[in-house]
Amino acid sequence: MKTIAACMAIVASLILSSAPAFADEQSPPRLFVQLTGESMQDQAMPLVLANQAMDQGAEVRVLLCGAGAELALADHAAPTFAPRDISAQELLGRLLQHDATVEVCAIFLPNTEHDAEQLIDGVGVANPGDVAAWILQPGVRTLGR
Image (cartoon, rainbow, N blue to C red; front, side, top):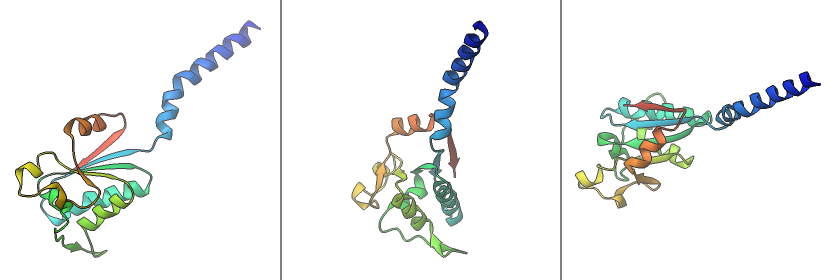
């Protein structure tokens, strides 16, 4: 009888100690993408990967800085690329349609002639503390260019 009780205690402790692991396995993967590049490929490829990750169930957060932040401007004319004839701005729009968090970096607007009204609907202005806290969560993968 003591052996059964000891086994039950061991099994219970194993279940309780692995509960956080089960919770992590059940939460969606998270991807943080920082986009700063000037070239079409530097802007498009991270967004292609972000869309693929989103399609595979990941929670995606995108931070646009420098030339990358210009993609968030409603009047920005982004060139298309082969083979899908799609622009980086259209890829960004797809992320927004699927509830990805997309923000321009906090220093973009104050250091350009642009204002928040010129941003595409759904794009916010990042709070550095919030972004840092999100990145530091366990299991967040980062991709930057």
